[in-house]
Length: 573
Image (cartoon, rainbow, N blue to C red; front, side, top):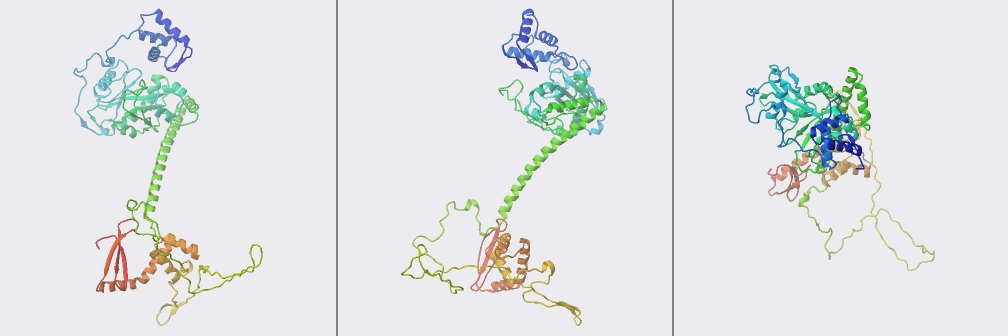
């Protein structure tokens, strides 16, 4: 082998391979366990607390064998998973010695204060944890090596829950992206992360809010127990939640953050052939007692080293780390909420724009739905063969302009056989508002004992000051014609009056003016309705009408002398 391999954070080259092959040749009777022990001892491969990393060494040997670089002795134990020593030699299916109690829902206050026991190897609590998980957890009891075991009891000494925290997963895309570290940083600092591998509340414990309470207390205790066990400070706690089986509500209630979803394969399933269930990944969020360095920085290594330097300052430094991490995680959470809020705002703005387009009144109120429209409409204009239509000659001529042809415009020579060509140009005059300053008087009548005013037919109100600028009768008539007869919207009517006639007003002001005109003509309208009702024959018809949307109806009533119309949302009236 000319190039070195990188396995379990160590470089394995030709020198290391020759050393391992030499041991295999000199000691063919050694088991795999003995080889891993000697390899870890010779390489001084130890944890931060000085323990030999024989499990890592054994995994390295297995990988070298899988690559065909070495040959290991045969495995001594076969036949599937062995019963963990913590369970003793009790066979499956025998009577459990753990006391059972009837399921009864009790409030959390009746269980407090909870007693936490870190079950060490060889202690009775360790066996209780193993039995509880083996009998009541759907994944059973895992290999306890490197796992911190917690047995939780209530104030009466009754077992309540079991929790296991072990080494973090070697590589997970969602977590690594959330932390923001590189591959080399992950390999050198993964021991600062813990994984909540098991969480079990015994089935006869029926207490609301107990799960989130246990998770919060477990993280606080783990901050002290993890360094004591592994010799390294704890930065982050993670877990997997099988989303097809659980919702993970208790983790969210304990202030954990969901950072992503796994791909549904295990570490040894690179071809994605085992179809493992996909799981959501949850690291804790804003837990003040957990110094979790999940800073999204351009230099994650320098961030971790600065937090390590702060922790070395003792209790003040640890307090600073806790608050730095808490603020950092809160910022991450707020950033996600801001992104979600912005996305939701964009959706709402799009919906508002669509509703405004639907509610916008068109020039043609009889608008059809898109599905009812003809995709190939007929060509406008008369059919072929009809005589053409031309503008009639004006009856009145305001100005006559004669242009004589004195000479050729090109060569300036004389022109003969001249005749006249007559055209008529109809043009709008330059329009500007005609402003009339109306001055009226007001005074006090001694005889009537009241205020009296002088009036004029052009006067529409007695308002003064800024409200004293009013539109005249012709301007109001034009506004009514554009909006009501021609079907322009309020804004378009205001635009026409402002752009072409220099009349400045708003859509709201126009609406008030139209309401004033409606009040003025209300008596004539009521009189016309009475005459229509008293007519001997009245022709009536209705059609759908667009008033801020479909659903309205336009009713038309006509006689030989008058026509009235009204809009109504009720078809049967």
